[in-house]
Length: 385
Image 1 (spheres, rainbow, N blue to C red):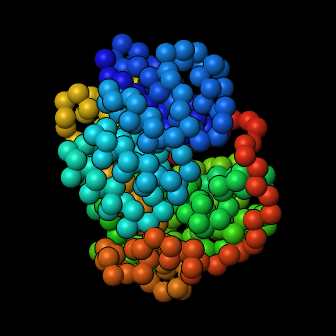
Image 2 (cartoon, rainbow, N blue to C red; image 1 turned 180 degrees about the vertical axis):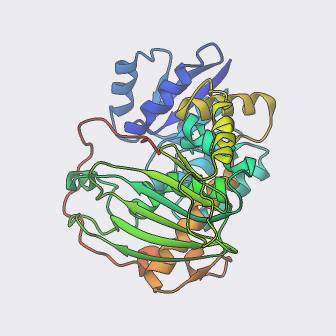
């Protein structure tokens, strides 16, 4: 029976706890930690976690709970690195919420702590554990669509201004960024997973509708590959939250929400009306052959992490995967702030590699005008694509 500690008992912690409880014969939550007095106790009582001890200091929890196998870090982004490193140096494996950390410097320190202490580090990327996304990945890996020529990725969310009233949201220092880092990180990770890393990035940032936040609420980026381009829109101003990943291959278009189109040309180069029905059927067959995942979302990733902890193997999403997503976000921010194309990979001597550069250089679109300890209502942890 693996023993689990949860650091941070805000909204996203519920997704972790629910996922761990799905594996009740394999693990037990024995500790909850939150610096806000009474918060961990309230969640323990609400969710019936009578066997979990409560702490307000993570270092104290790690020193006291010497039998911990795995810690979930579910705190604001600016705290991820320090808390993860503390746990790793205490000999505990770590699953840290997205985004991994606000800077590449912090990501590399986390990866080094895992390596130097022989521990496992995983970064939450729960959208990889979705049947629709796994199906799209399998179809692209089949090669039936041909080499990718163009992709359109829409990370479309909507948030009211109250969203940025929460104390840690809405500033470059505490949140690390706006929707590009904290919402589109999901779609950027999926893009990297399916298409690989781009060679260069250009981007534009703005705050279109949240006058109570320093950070961007909308960015539009172009990722440059060898012969392909990918457009990525990151938004919290999109009514309806119509998210999509559309991938154009040389031979066919595939997308989530699911759609397949394969054109063929007439003698003049225009599309034939009937298209390539045989290729469409072959792609649909690959999609139909997808074996549904036993667990999806956070539960899918936590199930894999529990297996990795027992087997001492690399988790499906490790620290390097989390770092790649942060590198892409960092390049988007650098391109948008400096108004130029940014080549990848980023080197340690790039100013944006370092912690604090965004705080110094990024535009403060507006001033944060409210700071509340907690917001009512549920959070949204995923959408259709």
